[in-house]
Amino acid sequence: MALALEILQSEIIDCHQCPRLREHCAAIAQTKRRAYREWDYWGKPVPAFGDPQARILILGLAPGAHGSNRTGRMFTGDRSGDMLYRVLHRAGFASQPLSQSRDDGLVLRDAYITAAAHCAPPGNKPSPQEIRNCRPFLDRELELLPNVKVVVTLGKIAFDSYLDILKSHGAIPSRAAFVFGHNRRFQTAPGLPLLISSYHPSQQNTSTGKLTEKMLDDVFRAARRALGKATGLSDPAGPPPHPAPASPRPNTVENRRNPQGRRSFRQPGRVSKV
Ligand code: SF4
Image (cartoon, rainbow, N blue to C red; front, side, top):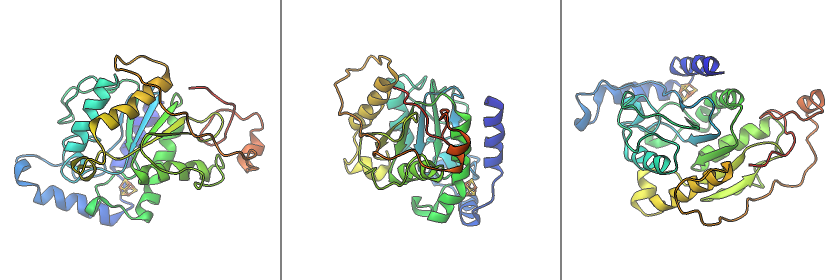
């Protein structure tokens, strides 16, 4: 699986499906920000990063123009990442609280970070078509991460993107039953990972106080609690997860081929307590 994930990341780096985004990434890499003019910007799709045996998958929106698009690693080199990695370190998912470059020694433990779009978009807004172009990469990542028990989505676009994948495989009938909010937990379908939605740690959200560091701590405490491990943080009881909407197992071709309901992102299966 680790090799398959590496191959997938190579494909992402070489992807040119969204000319607008590729041009934007390259243009930013040429003009640079004054503070980083000595940097050799990455300037292309940013691969996912983390532990192939991860039990928690963190799904962001897209690389930041002068963060990941500069450093070449998810959430590395900007304030969003500064907050995220401090939180992940406190929760025991990151080896250090600082994330500055691809060779800074940071290791993720039991966690894997990817994004709904792998290229930095103008205005931090990929188009719906660009999100759709990138979704097959996420779909394959989900298949190649067999131990994932918790998915944390950062922001509504990531939340919708994950649900769209479940819907495309017939695991949920629609997105309508899942209402985005901060630190909301959803049991999407029997046998699938617990979904936790969070506000994105964007500068806009953090500078306005919409998302505080404590609020993000709470999300990853909930994730850690779901994995059944102590974090060393105080662990107040959280709200119960939102149950999956009552619906029969969809009559998809895949389900008919797999009547036993083997655990897979493509087929809902037996309930797996997390
Ligand atoms: S956003 Fe995704 S699909 Fe589009 S060019 Fe980048 S890697 Fe390819």
